[in-house]
Length: 251
Image (cartoon, rainbow, N blue to C red; front, top):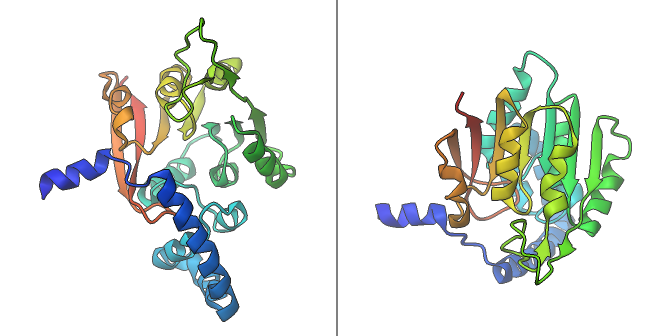
């Protein structure tokens, strides 16, 4: 049993076909639940109960408006609590950089002085822009990938999109002279992003590395110069458990 549980940490048990089917079913169930008053009841109780919050979030999968209203990132609950407390207890206003925009962008903006968020997907970026137009402390940047040239191999490719070059996305953090207190890695090319993020992290800063349980990330997370705190558990909006890691420099 122990080996099976360990295996669960390193395999993604949520293939794309399962996600698509699940989302379709949830959309139907949400309509039914809205009609009978269940969604309104959950909305009322979600701020005061993690159980109700999680159940409500399951009806918000891939629905940005709902996730923003629930005021939650798509990390594990324990990691959310950790980052929330970390930001609340900082001795100075936090500077945050984010790879991968989303509901976390709005959540972070409420808790920091300045947030720079990078997104590669045009459609998703446009959606986030609509929700952040009145947020003065958010800088949203769109860094779409280029088509990978056959005669010009790149280290900035993603396992999900191996024929695209994400160099401008990954290296966007180098455009800023400042160091950051918190860096979120929740988008494409995460190992490459981690390498550059370490150089832009303040001495006592943290990196939030989402889905750190996936096998393809274990090599980059096994470096000797970093300290990792792993948070395994439920994730808002997902029926699958996952892991979010807090990464620090070893000074």
